[in-house]
Length: 332
Image (tube, rainbow, N blue to C red; front, side):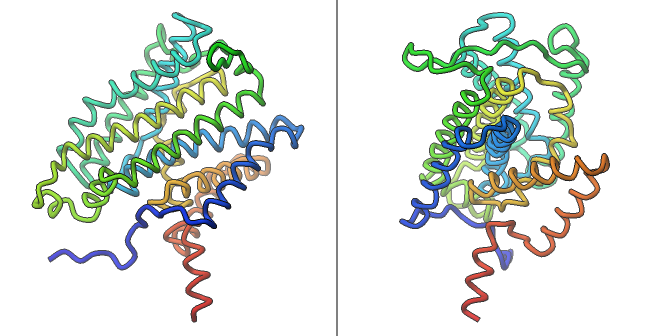
């Protein structure tokens, strides 16, 4: 009989009054941040954290809730960004919402056959397949010069206006308007994902994570739900890709590399799996470390790697586990 781990991955937590208040304060601070801080560099940095936090949260849906490891989940951010960028460049330069929809739907269409193959495996085989398919996408982006721009990337992507019910409220070329758009889309994705995870569908994903064989014995169609969880994660990654191309106005193949994929996995581990909000914390910490250390040395990867190793050793549940350690210390 299979033993369960002594410290399982955290399941979804319900919002208490204190958590709702803390979340409201965080959202308020994020909303007023670009109006208080005049330096647009920091506005862009927080924007980047939000985008990669959404990508890390999408990976957490797979790893933290379904128990499926994806080494190159960033490939689907790249897919969404390339598809949206190509649509804006060659079809409709001013259609923001239609372009975002095309990017997300295109990402899901790419992810469907890939997921159909992958869910027939599990464990290490699943993880290696994600690496194989991710490298295929990376190679296509690198070599298909006539479409993707090759190693030069996709440049000159236009900045469409942000319109709500026909009313133009800003332009994606404006750092503040782009930041507020990113914040709104990320919050919408977060609450939708939180609602899905707290539904019976989320409970099934957790059952598969805990013991796939037992879930199958009780009548759960494991492959079907793994595929749906995969599509949910890839759809969220596609949204992050759309925000990325709007923010940068550029997408290159290095964004889809295995090295960048390892960075996204580190974000999830740093923040904590199985929490949804933990990956946002991990993304913020990782990007801050990368930005700060890279100003001191070009070998910043070495120091970031050492920090991550120490955190994984001493905080195996990530920063979200700090609260448990403080509670345990008080009790003792």
